[in-house]
Amino acid sequence: MRYALKWQICHMRNVTMMMKPFFEAVRAFKSGPFSSTDLVKRLGYASGYVRNFLSQATREGLLVPEPRVGKREKIFRANPRVVRDIVRRGGKDKEELLNAIGLRSKYFGEYVALDGFEVIDHDQDLYRLGERVFSNREAPGRIVVTNVGVPKKIITVEV
Amino acid sequence: MNIGKCWRFSDDEQPPYPTIELNVSSADRNAAISPKVDTGFNGSLAIGIEVVKKLRLTPAGTVLVKTAAGNREVPVYALNLSQPDLGITYATLAIGTERSLVGRKILNDRTWLLDCKEERFCIIAQTKMS
Image (cartoon, rainbow over all chains, first blue to last red):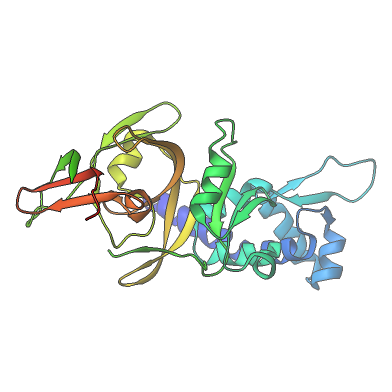
């Protein structure tokens, strides 16, 4: 029991520590491919740190490795499923992610519907957006809706 | 004044409060709920945890809402909403709150009777302008 708790705390700490470089990688490469050399060059991280980050982030499902072609360096991409998980969790990580994707400058004050890193629709009115996106029964479960910054048409509940 | 469908107040708190019956459904489950009528809520529907569990809903995201205690982030759920007496059937987003609420987006563009003496909340089918 104690071991399980210790493992969980340790795991949470590792995930939290990984989020910063993950958001930096998303900010730099969005959903595009990158290698460990790209991370070292663009973000100025030490190569040992990058190696650790890439292996841990891949294990945790934050990054997806692409099949290696010949002897070329291994290529990674940010896992689009992470967007859904982070948006559903909300909080500071969501803000960081939306910033890193570059939505803050474009959609500030609006609601956006995201399919992975792609904005499939946006609106100032949450209900109009919801109707458009979810009225189609085939709407995939991976689509998530969220606000970017403080919504201009914020929902008010007096509770 | 032509009084149409009426819903009884709920007395699970005092004084009793107005409610409306609504049908909500997810892909494979449905439920009839009686959310509290909340004119301070500018959305359409808020659902409590028991409805979320009953419909086995998973959040379709999170949004920031303004409450009396400040801004707060809440989950949103995609569901189908219907109320035959109001003639509404559509897919909508409901926010997750402690208890189920029906807001002004559903009440708007209709005339209502809030009868606290008889403890009923009714839709007015026709009004005659004098």
